[in-house]
Image (cartoon, rainbow, N blue to C red; front, side):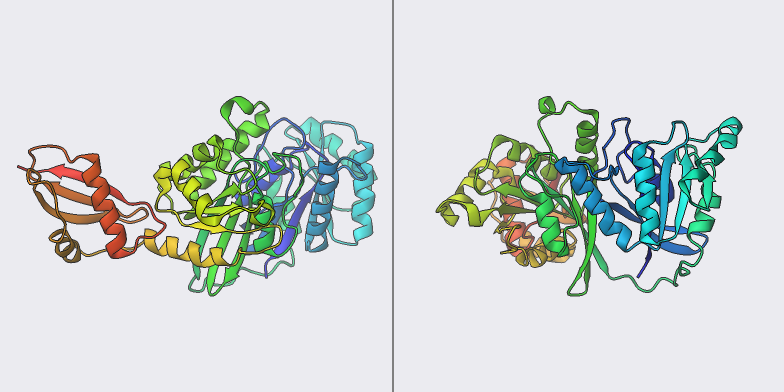
Length: 426
């Protein structure tokens, strides 16, 4: 198991910038608004052949009574309990605050190794002032600039001492990246917690609690599933704060990087216009989609066939997506998703030989004035087919749809989109 390096500090001291610098990629949202990061964000990183897990926590204000800050504090404490080393990050451009001192006291009580990183030290004059922060009582102090990557080598040399060396890479297990999407407050974070079997993500009745994309790696039947809980996507006009705008951009980015998409719907509210908009993002990304009807246990005497009919009517473009009924809160129906995800993954990567396709083509019936010469598969993820016609006229969309439906039936492309391209040859 990888050692954990946990970054903590009060809001807006640069934790996410440091996290991204250590992780080597933009994984956490960075901005000027305090409190952008709320959940624990994690990534695997490597330094001088030491492989470890780096965790970015939300800005901590001890004893804050508000629901979101207190949940951030609780999430951070869960990460700290498992930490092999802690980076306590403070802002070197400001005076020490009571929150800094309270957090320093809390960290000393933990008895874990702590490195004090004084951030935003990007000039020699500031470096000379950094040592005044020794008053917090930590022996190991490192002046750094996370934004400009100054001082990071010395900091990482210290904190990774004692971490296990990276083992030679074995043959990797199948890894499937799964994005959980939906509008705010449909239960995305609750579903991630249900998969993880722990309170991995902050769950509250406040819509928009999740801002960053939070991921969790879970092994199931020999497959490595990486579940990504994205921020709830709002209508453009409803997205005012910079952090929320960035959340939507990042959610769409993670959607494009996903192998399979879980689209959450709220059984108590039915399918609304925003559900269609968000589902459209998955459709445009050409990803396998599973439509997850959450909170089914709370639905008042709903009829499953009628609800499926409503889903199919409102989301016609996702006719290939299976519908699963579940309750993330109780865990009912969550287990079925592993099989559906795997089937969607398999279908998206399925390749059919040209010989099989053309034997299949001979059994299809087309308009007498359209001659389809042959068909071949060009690529996978999504399965993409090229149909060659006689060149007299374009293929009508209804004919294209007919081919897609027959391909899906014959070759079992359940859950995956199919792309058909036409080339005319005289």
